[in-house]
Image (cartoon, rainbow, N blue to C red; front, side, top):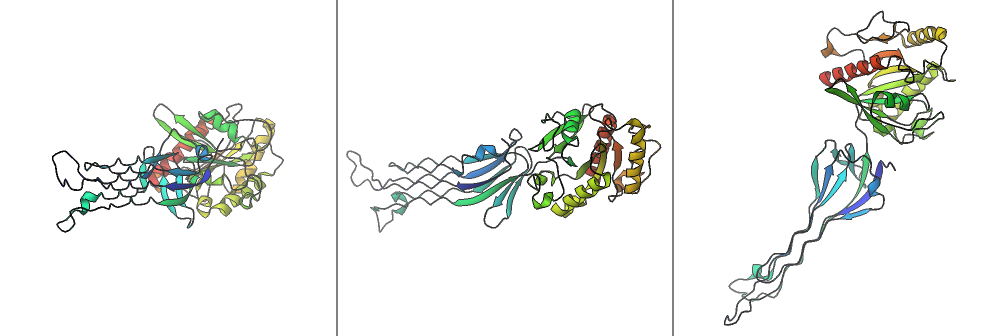
Length: 368
C-alpha cells in the first residue's frame, strides 16, 4: 500500500537515574560513596534510504520512542546509554512540525542523516556530591526526561520530469515503455491510483527520472477526481510533460487549458515550470487526419512546425521543437520546449521523445 502522509509522535529516551551506593569492603572502614551516574537517553534520528519508497510502514506504529538510559550502579559504574532510534524515510520526505506547519527537515539524498531530538541526560550518582562538608551524600539525581514532538511526514517524490494529463491518456503506457516502471494499465479512467517513478536510460551512462501521477480533471485543485492528493509528487519537478489525447472526446484546447490552469491553481511555481507537450495515441486517429489535428494544435499554441530536428521526429507528422544557439541561455519558458505526436503502443516518436526530454533536463541542470 502506498502512503505519502502520516502523523507521528516521537519521543527521545529518558536519562537513567543516578545511583546511591557506598563502598563496602572487608577491612575498609568508611569507604565513602561510590554510586555511578545514569546513562543518557536515546536520541531520535532520521535517515534517508533509497530502498524505501513509501511511508506505509508507519501506519501501525504511531508513537516511536527511543530507549531509556539505564540506572547507574555501585563501584562508580555508569549506566548504559539508551540506543538511538533511527527512523528510515524515503527520499523526498519532509519532516513537518504538526502544530506550526514548519518544515523542519527535507530528506533528499540517500544516506542523509539528521539528529531530531536529543535524549535526556543521565542523573548524577551520589559520588558526584561528595565534598569536605558532606562526605556521606545519600541522594542522587533522577534522569532528565526525554522530549516528545508531534510531527507529520509528507512524501514528495523526486523526479526530473512529471507527467500531467487527464485520466486514460497514456501516461502509464508511456512510462512503462521508456523506463523500468511497471504500472497497472487498463482501458478505463483512473487506472493509476498511486504515483510511480521510472528511470529512463539514455545510452549507457545517462538517465533521468520520470514521475507518473493519477489523472487530473477540471476542479482537481478543489478536490474533484483524485484531487490534489498526488499533485504534490510532481511539485519538486522542474519539467512537466503535458500529455494531450488526440483520440479523446475532449477538445484539444480544453485539455491543455484545463491542465495548465489546474497546475497553476495548485502551485504558482509549478505553473511557471518548463514544459513540453506530447500528443498521445496517434495510432488511434486515422493517418490522414493526424497532420491537420497537429497543425491545428500548433496554431493554437502559437508556433509553427519545424522542418528538421536533430532528434529524428517522424517527418510525416508535424512537430515543433525550440532550438537555442546558446544553451546557457535556455529557451522561451512561455512556450513548450517541444510538441510532438507519439504512440507508446507502436513506439511512434518514442525514441525522439526520450532524447528531447533528456536534452531539456540536461539544459535545465546546466542553466539552473
